[in-house]
Image 1 (tube, rainbow, N blue to C red):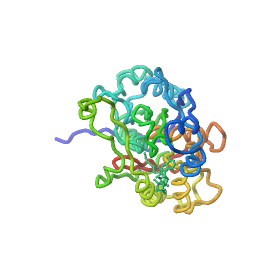
Image 2: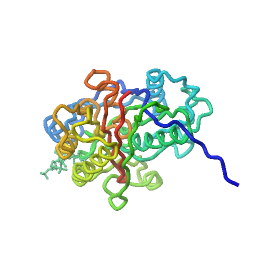
Image 3: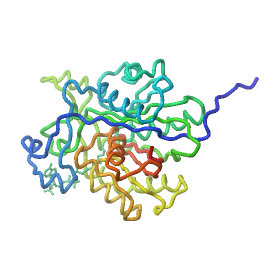
Image 4: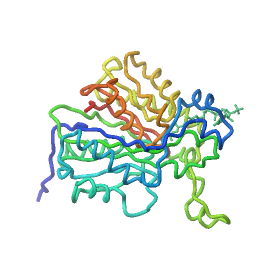
Length: 332
Ligand SMILES: CC(C)(COP(=O)(O)OP(=O)(O)OC[C@H]1O[C@@H](n2cnc3c(N)ncnc32)[C@H](O)[C@@H]1OP(=O)(O)O)[C@@H](O)C(=O)NCCC(=O)NCCS
């Protein structure tokens, strides 16, 4: 007895992208009221001028739904035809249920398979890799992928190694069938030996049982992460480009995770990309929004006209784990 298996579309593509940026803009001067730093240091060492922090009503669900509605509208796909919802986040603070089920219901993807992914700043690219496979194997017809974070909830505002970096927001993409290849092979992986470089200060139970109960926060050994991102991640990005069958001169747009402008520049140099390749620099106004950073940066480039529909974009996410994932996509 041989089982029947599902078969899907020959190719998949990103059909629409949308983002949500919290209302409150926090500039470096405000950050420096709590840490010993300066606007000049923050801009020179990270590229960040300002970031957004979510208000009480700008929850993980609210921001996700706002981003998803834009992505769905732009894709032209009826929300009822979305069969799977993947939400990449490390800041949905409930162990269960996944936030993806409530988001699926609210956007009208009624009954869709729905789950959360914990892959930090690589989460959106992990989700995109799964969505591509789902569509091409027939596991799902259309997939909604969301990257969303409220990192300000888990940031110690008095920690000068992280307070200026982390921020909040959401980005979403609708993936569906296509006549042409629209999502290249993923290059992804992890390095658990370096798990200690970006972690929580302590577990939730330890923080709650402490003499003064408090929330754990994120802590990071920035410099080793910086070196790993600049060198090892440039190699992974080069592999994603080559596995998509492209040479550096074939690429139109480069959208690395918005972790640090100097990392973006180091990767750009290591990849030997031509000077006319458009580079995402959303970090200047948005800080590091982890899983949301890549879709937010893509949306900004499309809205400003710097990047255009049909162009090829190399995207790569990397972060706590350590984990990474990158692929080439055709912009919607
Ligand atoms: C955090 C980061 C911007 C720090 O930049 P850096 O160049 O590595 O800086 P260092 O940590 O080596 O510190 C350099 C100096 O600046 C000082 N410094 C650190 N934070 C500072 C701050 N906020 N303001 C002013 N000075 C600061 C340090 O004390 C050190 O001083 P010293 O030379 O007198 O000892 C950078 O390491 C980074 O972006 N890392 C990667 C982040 C990332 O990719 N995360 C991944 C996903 S979440």
